[in-house]
Amino acid sequence: MISTPTTLVEILKWRGKNQSDKLALRFLKDGELDEVTLNYGELDLRARALGAQLQVSVKAGERVLLLLPPGLDFIVAYFACIYSNTIAVPLPPPHPARLEFTLTNTFRIIKDALPTAAILNPSLYEAILADTKILNQFRGIKLVLTMEDSVKDWAESWKETKIKGDDIAFLQYTSGSTTAPKGVMVSHGNLIHNLGLIENSFGQTGKSETVIWLPPYHDMGLIGGILQPLYTGNPVTLIPHLLFLQRPIRWLQAISRYKATTSGGPNFAYDLCLRKVRPEQRDLLDLSSWEVAFNGAEPVSYATMEQFADYFASCGFRLKSFLPCYGLAESTLLVTGGPKCRLPVAENIDKAGLEKDQVILTKEKNNATKTVVGCGQIRENQTIKIVDPETQKICSPDQIGEIWVSSPSVAKGYWNKPLETSSTFGAHFPDSGEGPFLRTGDLGFIHKRELFITGRLKSLIIVDGKNYYSHDIERTVQESHPSISPLGCAVFSVENSGKEQIIVIAEVPFKSLDNTEEVKKSIKRSISENHDLPVQDIRLVLPGSIPKTTSGKIKHFVCRQNYLSNTLKELIHI
Image 1 (cartoon, one colour):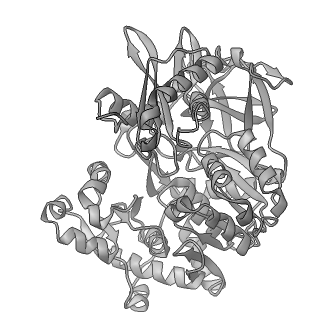
Image 2 (cartoon, rainbow, N blue to C red):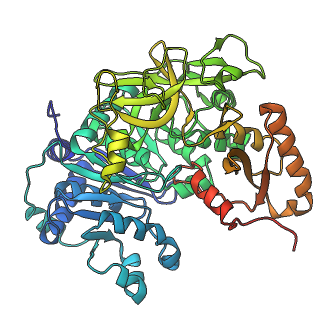
Image 3 (tube, one colour):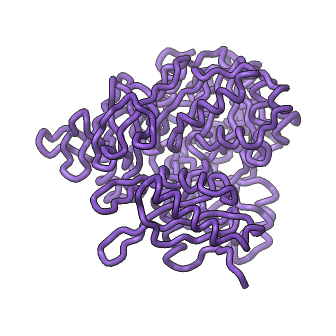
């Protein structure tokens, strides 16, 4: 490949010319055997054709919404934006049968991004045309259909434009797990640096084989699952994320069938497989090819990795395949991860010290300690500092602080939000003036060049001067009673008379209606025993009521809003 590519256009054009027949993408429409494919030549041709169509009506630098379901059309549309030097805005597609409900968040983003065009499929296009109220909200936005005809003719009319590394490639709207979504401005230079960082951290080569179920409008699904294999030059098999959630065995079957070397997702995906994959299904799998099982986007549990490795050991899975990693959209995707083929790094830290932002390492593993997982080593061309979020001074090695990052992967800022951009992306040390740094909002420490994550500033709960993390208490709640849905609880705090008070929302099935008091008592008892905390209020809601991002992270700020506005879908006697 070209030695120093500066944009994805250069990479795909080269592969389209020199590796035209090599498989680029395989999409499993049913999550299992019904597959459609694209080689590099076909992907380049279709991207140029749709890109040429965009060049007719959209100027370079204008925004283009991608309102397409996961699949090959989405990927072609993304590259069409890259080829036309427009700014792609990937979003979860609205459901044609429930437009008004599913478009609510889309219209919020439209007001922020001010797109000129939107690419969509025929079913969504017809649904929008049939609803005058919805159509009016798309006024001023050109609706562009995915192409099936005249591809070659359009491709020949494509005009290559000069793209600079500092130009914005796409807007990655943040997940909204802790705040309202904001559009991260990811440049072409950011992408190229981060894709190379992933390649080196994960040990990817042209002989790798990737399987991904994460949605393409999520940064891990798009960058880690689609763009990274294109960068390295290895095939990727894609599974619709809803079909994975319905039957997690589909993910593992694809890894087994296509001898995948690289795959992964958030910690909950491994938990889901442990709960849903039966022994007789497991016995038909061969996971021996799986070299990199990355685990990121939410707190990584060492217990989950141990249990997964033990349960799937009989079909060839190895604990050393796990590769915990850390990243965020504001740094394109990856910050730390790897190297591959090593046992996960874990440390036991004293809980009492954790409550005071102190790192007290111990060999003991008991109720007074917490096991934290290393999320990879700090790589070249990146600077990571652990900083006191109040004083903005560098922490001592035995202190927990906010993670600050300086890297070519750090994005340009938030679209159309100069104040938020300055406060998040423009941090400097007051004494030396060193900067700028990205303030991640995540808390952690560095030990032997390994980054450990302990929590988030915005999900930090402070009671009587002690620190508690929402995800720690949520794990306790999940294990407190069998009626509580797996991964079905949210813990946050509200202020009352100047003090933070703990609120718990837990999902339980309707059949538990007559058992609600027992469930609440179990939750209170478990939190008291494990965290020595009182609980102000517990609300039981129906399964699926807790809002989550596309990657499965709980939207704590939405949960808090729903609680304060009394709009929870509670399980109550009538």
